[in-house]
Amino acid sequence: MKRPWHLTRLGAGLWLFEPGEGLDPGAAGDTIEAVSAALLQDRATCLYYDARAVAVIDPLYWAWLRQLARACALLGASFVLVHVRPETAYALSRHCPPPPFACAGSVPGSAPR
Amino acid sequence: MGQDASVQADLIAQLQVKIGSLTETIEKRGRDIFGDKNLMSLEEITDASVEFLELLVVVLGSPDPLAHDNPAFTALTRFIGEIAQQILVRGGDMDEFLRYILFLQRLFLESIEEHADMSFGRARALLTFLADLFNELMLAVFHIYLGEREQTIRAQQDELAQASTPITTIWDGVLTLPIIGSLDSQRTMIVMERLLTKIETDRARAVVMDLTGVRAVDSQIAHHLIQMMRAVRLMGATAIVTGIRPDIARALTSLDIELTDMVTRATLADGLKEAFRRMNIEVRERPA
Image 1 (tube, rainbow over the protein chains, first blue to last red):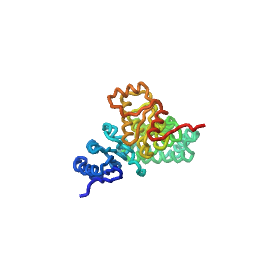
Image 2: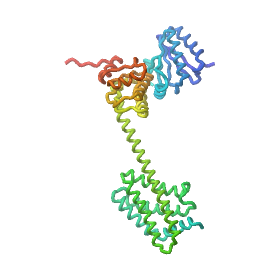
Image 3: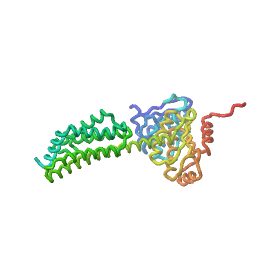
Image 4: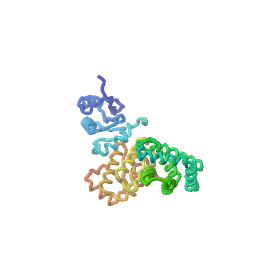
């Protein structure tokens, strides 16, 4: 069965997580386990979460992001949310507390959007 | 034939008999009012006078002339509305246009007075009908006028919002946002929409928000400022707040919100230096 997300090794302990349309933030356990295994094996230092395809970050999705960020912290890797859409940032700033992880405009060294 | 229908028939008959002189009078008055001020060309006045009478005849000939779902009546009010709009757009005065409509009403009333053999009941029905008709036309003009005014106010508000939130790319990846005046919910939304889009398109990494021009800060405005900083951070940029006056500091600290993440500097210049520092940019004087 095809996974509704894609994990790419960027090199030097950096990884990129790209969620797909079928990602279910309510059933995060299996995904966190699979991602953690890959990060652990590579002794990853940072996981970039690409949010460009995420149109809406609701409380459930927000909880999933925090859970994944906590998993990264347990593995000694930082979690960075990248490519947040302006409308998503606006909505999040109104309804959610400050993120307990870092945010960046893009993955360092990547081409412009 | 009912009273209303016979009244309409009377009016149609009068219009048909006097169409030439009525058109001429209407046109002449139109030229005096609109032609002199160059609000309508002479051809436009002639066309409008003829078209008005034609549409009026169609309205009078319809079964329920003043019904709002009567297409003929809708066409007449739309026609009057379009002329009103045209005059407004060309800088005309609505008072004069309304007086012109009152003049049209009087013109029809005067033409009725000439019929001495008309019964009181019929004359009253005619007067009532004409009063209703012209009241509707004036209402149509009023609505157009209100619509135009609202549009003007909205345009001015937009312009003001644009002018009072000049987001400037002061360096590659560094934006400045001097906030002037007050920050209500609507303005916060406009500012944030522009700012977040600009961060995305410019790939900005730092935003210096200068509050020197903020008039007063209450808890709502303080919330909006915090919200703005939070959104900037979510976009992956750093918000550096400058120009915080004592009253703003008081409002922000009274909110019971964690402010330790907030990057602040005293002045806009200091804020820019901090932004440059964070981006490893050094600006220094060249030795003489």
